[in-house]
Image (cartoon, rainbow, N blue to C red; front, side, top):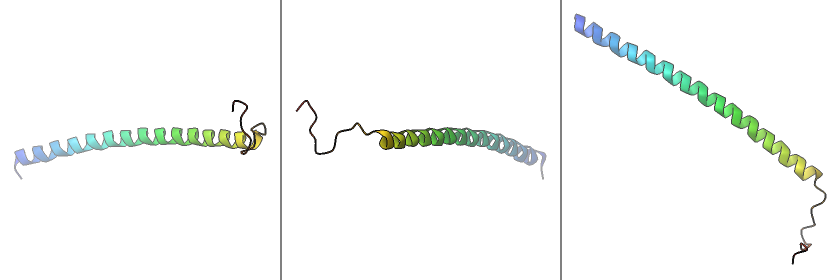
Length: 68
């Protein structure tokens, strides 16, 4: 192989290694975001369940609110 060809291959390999590092970092950041959103969603779902379970002050469905 010629010297120029080896240098070109090494250059491509170095760029690919850098791209792989950047993609890995992006993937790790996305996973952190997904984990945060999953915790938030679970927290909101739990709050909604607790509102449904503990809210006995809501009027029955067939009762009109006082402003009608």
